[in-house]
Each structure stands twice: as structure tokens, then as C-alpha cells.
Amino acid sequence: MLHPRYFGRDLRDSLRAKLLTDVEGSCNIKVGYIIAVVGDEPQFGRGRVLDGRGVAVFDVKYTAVVWRPFKDEVVDAIVTDVTDMAIFADIGPVSAVVHRDLLPVEYEYLKNANPPCYQTADQVRQGCATEGRRSCAWLSGANRGRYAAR
Image (cartoon, rainbow, N blue to C red; front, side, top):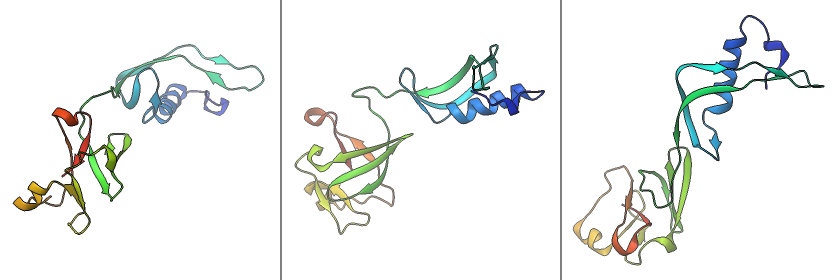
């Protein structure tokens, strides 16, 4: 919807600016997360003025970069925090929480590690360090579908 104050010579620029602010960074149930509007100029249809409101509605065709996560999809994540209860991570526009009950039993929380993390007893004995960046690793086999920070 476009307010009447934007009608005039710069209508196409106003429509493009409105498209970018309304669409980029949003989530659509059909296509997923809309990361960015790309490509050539969007195609704007004829506007329709809504009765009693004065705003106009336009049909728009545009090309966009989208991300739609699927069940059991393996994705890279940036771990933002590790606590004794859960691992918090950012997966693009999505924030994820992995509860400690979803981790394999052999992973234990090390609150005195710098930074705090979950490690197995083998990793602790080998002196496995995180080198300042925490990441999420996908566990395979019997633990398919579960994350662990290392």
C-alpha cells in the first residue's frame, strides 16, 4: 500500500523503496526468508486506490534471493552463546536454540573453559581448544539431527 503523498513523478522510486523496506528481511510462508531483492527493475502493475482509505495497492513482480530451511537440512551456524542449559546460534536470519537434552550423553558442559563449551572426555584429554571462535558441528550416525558446540 502506498500513501497518496508518494504519488507523482517519483512514483516508481517510491514503489521500489517501499518494496525494499517491506520485503527484504521478511519471511513469507510460500518462499521462505527473503534475503534481498535483486536483478533488473521490478515490474509494477497498475495501482488500485482503496475506497475510503486513499492508499493505492500495486501488483509487483520481482526477483529475490530467498532461503527456505527444510527439515533435516544441514546448515552452517554461528554459535552466539553456550550455557549449561543450551547452545544459542544464528543461522542466517533465524536464531536457534539447541537444548542440552538434544546433545549426546558423552558431551559435557565445561563452564571454566574459555569460552564455555560442550566437549567429550576424549576432546578434553587431547587438549582440544576452540581458538576463539565457536561453531556448530553436525553429528552424524545415531545422533543425526543434533548439534554440538566445539
